[in-house]
Image: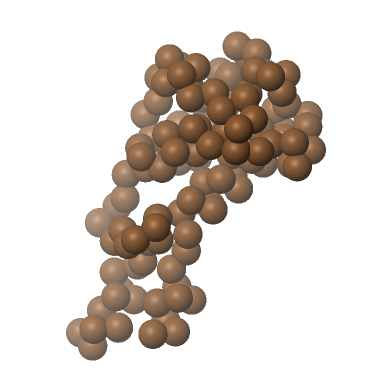
Length: 113
């Protein structure tokens, strides 16, 4: 059972951490200022910074996003959720409850295959 918990990771935390880091970089704010309800534009974002964020998110998370989607999801928590719903898992991972992911090779160890 230890293998499961040590080899899995929380995708939500990973997405949230990466997005928070990018927001702080682009907006020149402290990480503590980026909270769930923080709005990208209220923290100093503009259309050019949104384009940079769009490029980052598309590349970092290998997802297809539209600018209107980002505009509609300008709050931090909404943006995290948007990414999580668009992340496409490859065939070597399996989704679990609460956004946890597990490498299939580790699942085989758990079931004795």
